Length: 163
Figure (cartoon, rainbow, N blue to C red):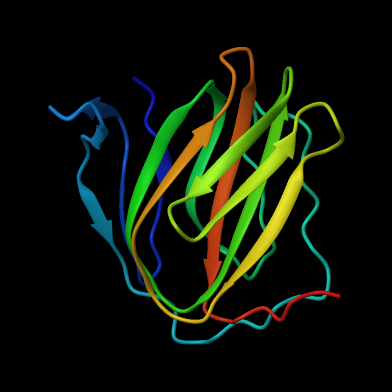
C-alpha cells in the first residue's frame, strides 16, 4: 500500500497506510513524527502559488509554506493522514486532479477544499487558523476514475482574507 509523504514543523503528524477499526472507520497504521518549527516567522506573500496540472507529480507551495502532507498519483477516495496538532497560522492546500467530476479534500472540522477535475491547472487555497487545531484528519473523496495530487502546508503567519 502507498504511504503519504509527511513532514512536520512544530506539528505532530501521523500518516501512511490505513486499515479499518472494528467500527468500520479507517485507522492509521504508521508511526508519529514530530519536529520543531523554525524560530523565524514567515510573512504571507501577496500572490498564491501556481498549481501544476499533472496529478502524477508532487505539487509545490509558496516558499513560506512547510509541507505537512504530500501525495501524488492518488486514486479514488482515501484517508491520507492524521495531523495530531496544528498550531495557529495558515494552512495552504494545493490540489490537482484528472478524471470526471470533482475531488474534495477534507481537513477534519477545519475546512473542505473542492477541485473540479479538468477545469484548469488545479486549486490553491489558504485557510487562516486563529487558534491551534487538534486531531485533523486529512482525507480525499473522489471517484475511482479520478487521479489526484495533494499538498497541505503550514506557516506560522496568519493570512488575511483576500478581497
